[in-house]
Length: 440
Image (tube, rainbow, N blue to C red; front, side, top):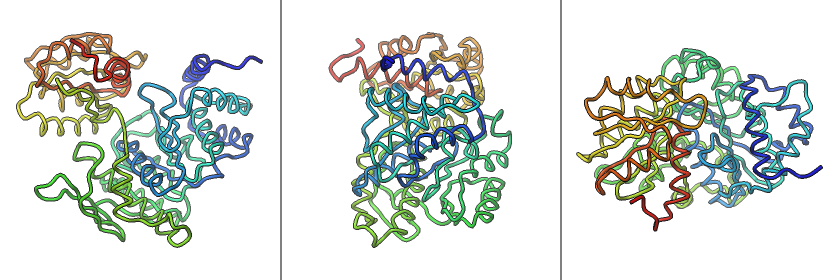
């Protein structure tokens, strides 16, 4: 049989999206068993939650890699290219490896139900990590936790970031229900660090952890992070370590929560193995050097200086609030153009309340995905919140080009509302803004 090309392979993988979301683990377990259970060949950290999963995972992976471990990182969704989801020591899986890995996984997909897009991608990630003989893999859930395809691993440490109502059709409509689903990643005896703050959510996690005899540690109670007075550095007060003078790799005050979670998880990892391998020496130098190399695109990412262009997914209510707070403190009177596109299953009216009042003008756009909200609906909602101009430019790249070309050099352009919108915008910058090419 003729080997698939990379483009043909991706087209085949993306078509699997039509099979939707299936909340059960039998199919992924059968595939992995046929592949020889690749995820049993390396140690893992498992991360669930609503926001901050990707940056937290990136911090942990960066520290493990700096310590000298070959480290895999599995995240979703990708912004521009599928390969972003599966990296080893910061290097994306190659196009040829995508094809080879997919064909191996497809051959193992022989069960009663055909695997979904995310199940295939997850199996590909684990298979690739095994082939590359990674020491550690940091694994982010796709949605939920209990029946997420990634929940077939036996992690060394679990992380549950924050909770905000999302995916109500699958995860429930209350924090209690959401915590039950996210808490499904908790395994017997495996320590958990979390930033869940809602009392109902905390109680659910405490009940699950008690049942599984899993140590459960809370942000702000058992470990914390604070900004140094008058400085742009942070102090971590951890489980057994106190580090000051730390620099956050990513902007936004909310990142101190994600960074604190990552450091607490690393403390647990390194503590349990201290003395077994010289690489398990958790020091301030290791943390600082590891974090200096951490990168997580599309989240408060500054991609152009004049005008300043910021990319931020802000794809749900909590993330929109965080972005609004960041912009409020950052703008200092500078004119802001918002380029916004939101998916139809999001609470778009409430999301707009955090963003639109900050802008001198709003450009409504639409990602090339069938779940995108109709721009006219979004425009009407935005116009109720501002007297400033609100226009529609449906194509994301055209909207970005117009926003930049019609902004002064000291203005700010923020592209947000959906990771799909940010992905399309980032592709434009990656392809046409190689520091020498300008929009003008």
